[in-house]
Amino acid sequence: MAIKYGIPVLFQDVNEYIDPVVDNVLEKNIQTESGRTFVMLGSSEVDYDPHFRMYLTTKLANPQFNPAAYAKAVVINYTVTVQGLEDQLLSVVVRAERADLEEQRESLILETSANKSLLSGLEDSLLRELATSTGNMLDNVELVNTLENTKSKAGEASTN
Image 1 (cartoon, one colour):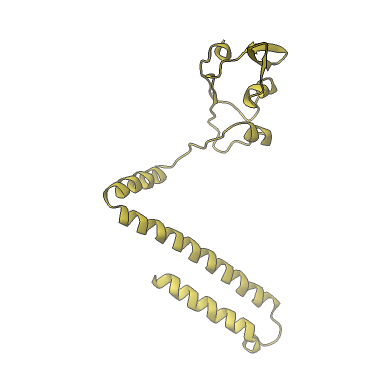
Image 2 (spheres, rainbow, N blue to C red):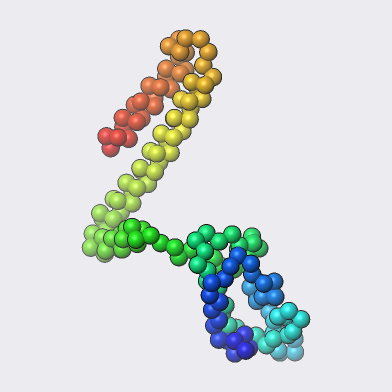
């Protein structure tokens, strides 16, 4: 009836299995014949109102839906921690009161992320050099240069 009259439907506590009977609804395989708009629900033709919406919710923290379900529907993760919510609210307030400070904070976050990525790459490079080094390590110019580069970059990231 909801599909026919355009009434939204909410399925609560859905598990990871979604019945294939609703595939045509999820895929929006809507057909029109002789001015009649309908969708196949199982083996039945059901009149379709374009205002119909179907919502599925789950209490699963990280649901492992069939990949096809992700292709057929919009999946939104509403899981939020208290700290994450506080950060979001603080960001909204600061942006309203002092947009310049919020932009500066965002650029610092991006810079910190880039620095962490750079340091991770340098650490990987240093470990690779150490693992492949033969003989006296102090004679390995490439290893010493990598170590110095890592040391200087780490010093710059920590002083910024």
